[in-house]
Amino acid sequence: MPATFFVFLILQILVVATVLLAIILFIISLIWKRPKGTYRRLGCMLSLPSLALGVFLFSLVIYDALVAGLTKTSPNFSDWEQAGIAKHYILRPGELFNRHSEKQLARINSLYVDGDESVVVSSQNYYPEKDSVVYLYRFEYKNNQSNRELLDSDTDENRLWDRYAAAHSVNRDDIMTTYEKLMDLIWWHLPLNAFLALLTAILAVYGAWRMGIKKREKDENS
Image (cartoon, rainbow, N blue to C red; front, top):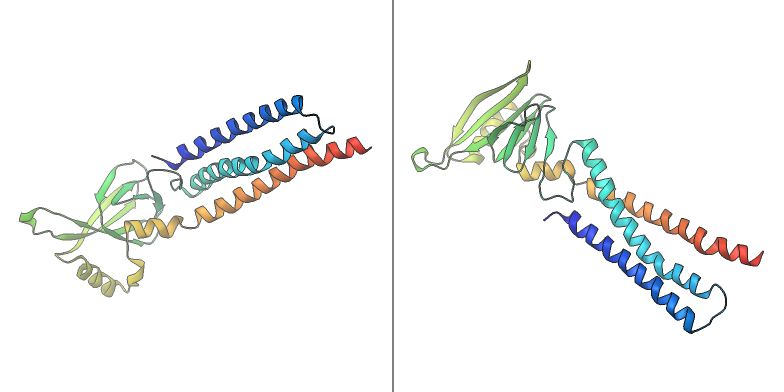
């Protein structure tokens, strides 16, 4: 289940808790008389933590969706993962898709992004008669056509990639599993989103404090 569900569940709980707090303070103010403005200030102060947490969580979801849209990746608060690679392809866990048709091109284990228009992938057959052979394919998109070229095959995937890296002078660390590649592309999203959400929450709390407490105190003393 996406984490977004739990975020909005917490937001609903915070709204209910804030309403209950307001009702409780109102009832207490009718029974126990205190100096003018006491319960209003108390209510404002007690609601600020809920406001901060609520704004932070809501902003986190919003910024997460915005950054995901701008970078053509999936949101962190989602039950699926994807990222755009090599201009024309979409990478999902264990799968490569054509961005233009959303057509699945292959079930893959590992990959290497070879420039802006091609991706080299390893794909394995698990049928006993195939002896679990791993195939190395190059997918290339040119002139509105997707081409697949079989490069090599082996029963050992590491040996297959070692040969490819040696033959094409490729850094072996640039050859990653689909999960490693996805994490390499989106790892910075969550820290950035959290920073922006925290900044938004701080500004919201400061604004609420200025409007709800400081301004009223100034008006009462004037």
